[in-house]
Amino acid sequence: MRRFVALAAAVALTGITASGQVAGMHRGIYIGVGNYQATNMIASAKGELQPNGTFVTYPTGSNANPQGWGNMWHAADDPNNRGVITYQLTGQLPNTTFDFTLFDTVLPGTTQTFWSRPFSTITIGFPQNVTDVTLNSDGYVVGIDNNNAPTADQVVRLDLKNGTWAGTTLTFPTNVVNPGLGGFAYDRLAGNYYFANSRGSAQLFSLNSTFAGLTTVATTTSTMIVADLGGDLLEDGTWISSSFNGNLYDFVAAGANTWTAGPASTNFTTDVSRERYSAPGSGYYACFLNPFGASYMHQIAYMDATTTPHTVTTLNAMAVLPNVSNTTFIMEAHALYNNDLCTVRTGKATWDINIRPDPVLSQYAGRNFVVVASLTTPNRANPIALPSGRELFLAPDPLTNLIVKGLSAPFVQNTIGTLDPFGNATGKIDLSLLAPNRLAVNGTVVHFAGIVLNPAAPDGVDWVLEPWAFVVNILP
Image (tube, rainbow, N blue to C red; front, side, top):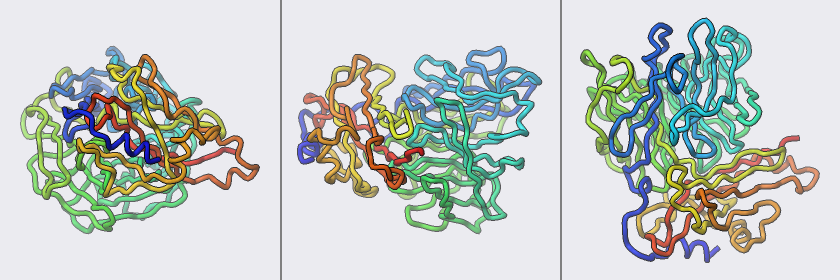
């Protein structure tokens, strides 16, 4: 345990930390653009704001590549860290399908369809109107289906491997509209979920890992706080929201039970996306829309949440989006390649630990890596700060010690080693050898953290992996 912490804290040479691990720097921000217009599918697009501040959009529709159109207000991290999982309509009406697909931003293009069905049967079964989505520690896509049909107000989960769904009905207060549309986020530090409603009286909810414990976290009586199409959870536990009613942002401070309005703004904020937890400080990316003119103008900014009000640093000039209708707008802005450490179910009691620090350049191929875990929850407000300013969310305990000493097999394996020629590695979790009453451990949260080592890099660390909460969920 001490050896691992010493490796993380050692200073080798001074220099600039890797892109994406400096406050306000990113490796690309996926944008989902659109409107449901059957006769004008160029209103939809997928693309990104590139690190150089340039918008790139790929029109979607039956004659476009990648295909797919609709309201693109949703994106979940790909378990392999190569892009986003989104849902879309594919093909022209009436021969349209409703799909969940992988948009690979490295290629770019839509490379995989996880689930599909004819759009004409949307009134049967679920999902019917899934709002924002996230990824959980089984590697499933999770969101709220808030349609008024038989599956209304269910938290739904898509098993990407099998293309199958499960759902659990939730009971909301009667005044809640569009639950989940105001953002749906997996808490990488605690293993539960947070989500907000949209275009109504703003409310924030939390949901435990078993989907059985729905809690109202915060409400408001202010008519000036109306969340728009997205929100996200910052590292300190603050929920940040886009705004639809004249505020630059709205938020629920960590531990608070009421919403607070941000400063007034002439721009609409249509979505927000957290930056890396491993970057210094606490911040997020916000997508601004100025619809007052013949063409809608768009801008994405970095917001420093450690200042009051949040300091705005624009990442591009206000611009019309290329290749799409000039009166469409960005519904989703999602920071890319931040899912460099996560777990994916492979069996009833087995999971892979995906370690993917750089899916674009594979620049860490051959580097040594260390991934450890603890049963102790990391301190949200006080992570381990490396001399470069990067942050490691780890609370070392006996489990950490066992992993570092190589004594955690067969339960946790292959978490210390060398990255392959593509800069990747895969650890293993195997709980199949637990006692016959192994289901009793379900709900236990294991907190993973890790680093990629390089003696010539700042802190002796090339890359700090994002924290990841693994929730034990052994199937019968």
